[in-house]
Length: 160
Ligand SMILES: CC(C)(COP(=O)(O)OP(=O)(O)OC[C@H]1O[C@@H](n2cnc3c(N)ncnc32)[C@H](O)[C@@H]1OP(=O)(O)O)[C@@H](O)C(=O)NCCC(=O)NCCS
Image (cartoon, rainbow, N blue to C red; front, side):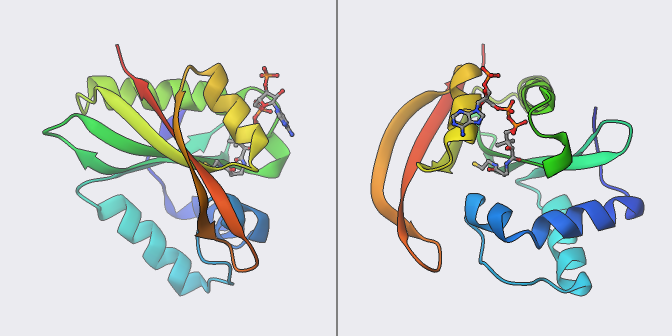
């Protein structure tokens, strides 16, 4: 299920925030985040009026999904997902994405979800394709990950 974060989710969210591979995949600054910085991040995400941040819970916290830049006028939002390594490859991501799509459609009246993903993130792209996200464009050498300029794929899905 998806639910709002609670204090006991901190360890899982902090581990994800500080996982260097996840940082690369999510295109966030590659560095170590102190407990105070992780708390500030969770606070920012959960109080953002243009965002939604929910913990994926499968008998305990195992990742998160988020919507950012929700535009209520246009009915659009950017989507993100991150799972703990131990729970990957079990179909949880597709289920969580399905629940998030439902939330976006029913609660926020979103008509379209958009996302950005590194072109080298084949696993995430395979997931999005499976869930019927369409590739819009690839921006070449669009994101610098601290070592390399990476191509970024832009995808979207109309919610019917
Ligand atoms: C992206 C993420 C949510 C996907 O969840 P997951 O549980 O690992 O995904 P799955 O195992 O269901 O894999 C999705 C699909 O990719 C396929 N796949 C797995 N590894 C692959 C690879 N290296 N190359 C291509 N396809 C791959 C799987 O076979 C599966 O397709 P199928 O269901 O038809 O068999 C998860 O890996 C994650 O949290 N990664 C770190 C954060 C991240 O990258 N987020 C996305 C940023 S935009």
